[in-house]
Image (cartoon, rainbow, N blue to C red; front, side):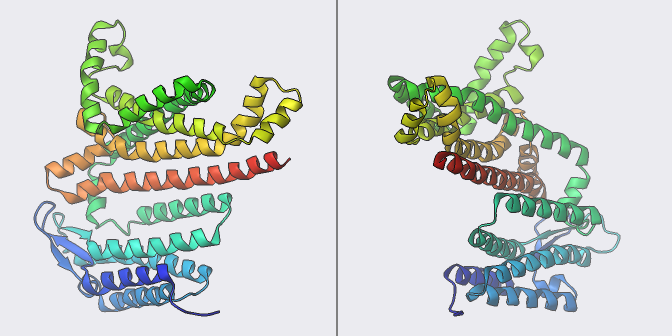
Length: 388
């Protein structure tokens, strides 16, 4: 097998080399808000550890550059990520003065570029290997278990983001639950309302353009503006409708955030339902009709199952979108990880911003992998039904 350079690998190799040679690895701050001082890998770690990490990165760069087997590249990327996770914790301990509780050590641009390059290499290899949906879920669970083990071990205890978490552990999990409630609750509500609306739009063509255009207009409204527009009507409902305030409806807080996310979620669900049903083969419909199925039976037992992969794609878009948009809800008292993001911005404490940003990214990433696996498994089963 030829070992000519791999096009994607060349880009990853350049990224890894730039991160290793020209970017700072860690940032040291005397306290959480002052300007930090950057450190290279060899300044951030003991000489032996720094040399070992540099050797691992160089090896990953060489293997990524050439056309080696995807399994070898994947193993190298995972080994590099494991080494990076160990040495970043060691660097934090090495740079933090003994007994100093005010100093903050955080990963700098070099670390994030190395992480991005190795993660991109692993993702590219997984895509090329085309693992089955169950294997993808297993890999996600293993990655989650490895991350949990590292956090529980205390290896990262001197990292600034972990120090920020330690001081806010109870609030963090409260806001995490609120974030998930907003994202998942609005998704469930949009799915329950959007799929029947999509079926209706598919059946009644005159209704389709008006509904989809109206939902498209909602999508063009900036999220902060939509949150603001909902404050007045929901506040009026809470003040005038008996019992509305008792069930949580208010001008600020979770209610306007939930309604806004619900409105944003409708267009992908409705439009994908219409597209999925329209994509069902006419021959399949005729076969179902020939078997004597009623229109309701054809919809529930034939057309809707075959359209499900496209509908699930819309639901995937909504979930990842809502996980990100729920961050903005903190501006109107809706809670979620955005609380830490906006507190950090107000205090110029970037580690506090990361405390809200990193879990949001990880949550969106996990949701995308899970739903992609679900979609692929549904495509397989739908394909078997269609062939049968």
